[in-house]
Image (cartoon, rainbow, N blue to C red; front, side, top):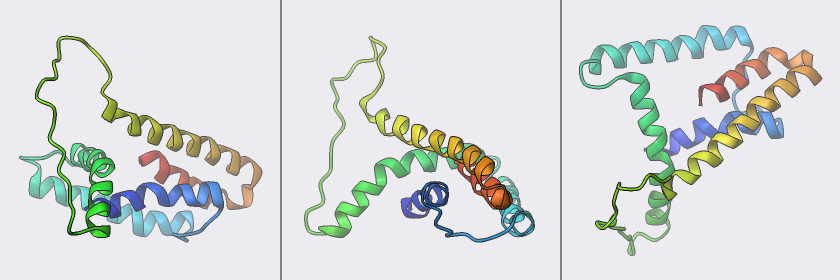
Length: 144
């Protein structure tokens, strides 16, 4: 489901750009609850599916799918009687090397996340009293 992935990707940007505190926790609380949850989650994924899927590759795959699935699911929710299905072109060739047009959203997302990293550094410098929360959110953004 792409909705949790999209929210997980956008939530730290809301704090960094607009100072909205969706997830309020200190650095210590983050380490004791969220980070431990994420580590245990990755360990369980590796234990259960390690022979078939690599946890980090699965995360990357789900992020990539989010970009293309989210608009499709939203269009079906908004208009359930008229779903469209786009068939991939069969006449494409890999004889010439080129950048796929479906890759453009990933460059935009990468650029926005990179600006978020710069905003993290700026906020740590200008608001040192909130540095622990800003570093946690900046790390979350970096993980994305």
